[in-house]
Image (cartoon, rainbow, N blue to C red; front, side, top):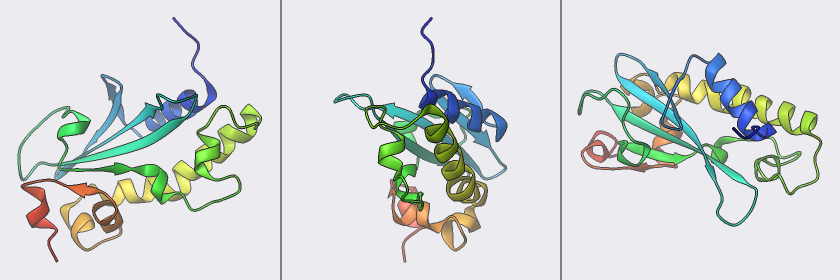
Length: 152
């Protein structure tokens, strides 16, 4: 078994502490209306990562652990991180010279301050349609039949 790097360990620790359950490399949280899923995607071009999200809408179809690529809404969590010192791309890129402690604290801050409130709001369809989680829809991709739920 290989040792996890600081990005993977911090992301996994955050998901675990937020109550997500890990299956097949993704983290899942189920509410009465949606399933939110998160995962890290390793870049094929170097030692960097992307944080992805998926939202499965249970009104459209039931599922337990839907595959990320079949989610009704998908996108990158990186787009929602507001702190630019250092920016999220640098935090997620292990070739950027940052200490593990700084990388861990900056990533955890971004996840707790910027990402978790959006994910919590995505637990309801109303949160996705008109509430705090609407940016997950607007900046992500909504696929049929979910796109009709979010048409303006």
